[in-house]
Structure formats: structure tokens, C-alpha cells
Length: 217
Image (cartoon, rainbow, N blue to C red; front, side):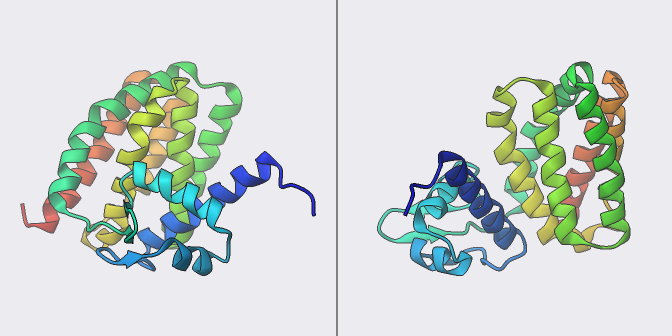
């Protein structure tokens, strides 16, 4: 049996990461519950190595807590934490979209416009699974277009935790943030730095109000 290539290992890890994140967001893995690495590997029908690597990334993003010799815990979501991380996310994401508007390539701009259209279709169809995929792709593309690897380190945990909170509490929204994400993509694709920054700020204000609505603020 031949050795598995490094690319295959990376793709299996990415697959495990995406599936585990999806299970956490859609509560197939419950907040507060504890799981073993073996249990998760069996549920994914995957080997333990890519699952372990995916869990390490999720732990760095604070989507799981790894307790040595005890297991993997899915942390509870709180309004307090969501409001705190949005305070940090607001200025960082604004800087990211402004740089993306300045630095995006023509190919990236075309992908942004396609993502803007796609995420609106997901909203119209109430397709949460597809919406999560588009949301993840939008976040990744913005960081890629900004061409500064430090945004990845700063933004990945903030965006991942924000995604989880929104999906767990989306019944609080009278509207849907798809149009806000589409506005960001369109203004960045147009190279409009000021309006891209304002569109990002509008999205964070929307998410902040959703969190406040959770506790009646």
C-alpha cells in the first residue's frame, strides 16, 4: 500500500475540520458535552490523525476545548463572549476589507461577486447548510485578498465563533444578514474602500444587536 501524499493529508484534515465545525454549529455536537477523539473519528468515518489535526485547529479557534486524557469538550456559547469578540472583530475586519478593496485581483473580484449572488440565493431558499459554506468562503476570500497573513491569525477565531453564535440564535433576527455580506463583497470588488469599511461596520452592528436582543438589551 503506497504512502498517502501530503496533499491528501491536508485535504483530509480540512475535510475533518469543516465537518466538525458544521456539526458544532448545527448542534450535532452539543455545547457542554464531552467527546473522545475516537468517538469523533468514528462519527466522521475518518482516521484519527486528520481528526486530531482538525481538533487542534478548532481548539485554537476556541470552538472546542481539549482536555488531556479526558476528551474534547464543546464550549457553551454566551452573549457576553459574543459582545466582547465583536468589539475586537469590528476594527480588525474593517481594516481587512479596506485592504482587500485596495489589493484584490481581478480574479478575486469576480469570485466576490459570485459569492455575493450565491449567498443571497441561500437566504432566499432558507438553505442554512449552503449559507454556512458561502459564509466561510467569504471570510476566507477577504483575508486572501487583503494579502496579509496576520489577518488569518486575528480573524479566524473571531469569525468562527461569530458564525456559531448567529446560527444558534438566528431565530432572533427579523431579517437576514446575507444582504450585508453581499454588500461587503460588492463594495470590495468595486475597489470602494470607504463603503467597504462602512458595510463591514454595518454588519458588526447588526450582529451586536442580535446578541443584545438575546438578553433584551
